[in-house]
Length: 260
Image (cartoon, rainbow, N blue to C red; front, side):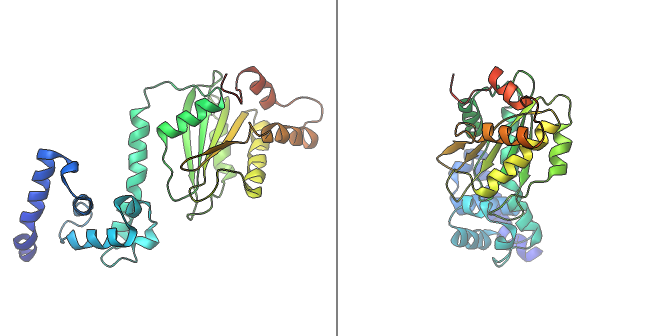
C-alpha cells in the first residue's frame, strides 16, 4: 500500500486536479479511461491497464461497447471491472433519457418516432428492443428495454411484455429495434416476433402502431412497408374473423405512416 502511494498517489492527484481545472477535454483518451478505472480499482496503477484496453479495442467507445467476456480477456480486468465498464453506456443512456424526461413527446407518425429515437437512444454493439408506451393521445408515458443475451440476438420475453401492456394507462405502443451490425431491414425472425407481439397486443386491447428498425445511419418502418396491415389481416383471419382489429382502427384515427 505504501509503495502504491509513493509511486502512483501523486499521479492520481495530478490527474484529478487537471480535470477539476480544465475538464475531461484536457485529458488524452487513455488518461480519461485511466481516471474512470481508478474508481473501480482504487489501489492499483491503472495507467498500463488503460493503455492495454485501448490497444485491444481501439478507443474508449470500443472499450465501453465490448462485452464482459471480451473485457476479461485483457490482463488486469476482473469481473468487477468488466461489469463497471459494461454498465457505463447504460448509465449514459439513463442520463440522456433523464435530461429529456421533462419534455413531452408525441409519436403520431414515423418521422416523430425516428427523431425521438435519434435524440434519446444510442446504437450499441448489442441488438436491443425498446418498448415505447403511449397514452390515448400518443404521448410517451413509459419506456422499457429488452436486451439480448449476446451481441447478435434479442430474446423476447412475452411475460415481460404482458406485464408492461396490462398497465391501464398504456393505450398503444411503438417498438424500436436496433441492428448494430447489419442492414435496417427485418429478418424472417423479426417478422415472426413482431407478429407474435402484435397478436399479444390485440388480445390485451393495446394498439400496435409500428416496429421501426435502426442502425447507425438508417431506419426501416414495418408500417410504411405494409407489414403492420398484413399482420392485422393475419390476426383477423386467425383470431378475430368478425371485426376489424383495434390497432387498425387506432392507426386510422391518429398514427400515420407519413410525416403528415
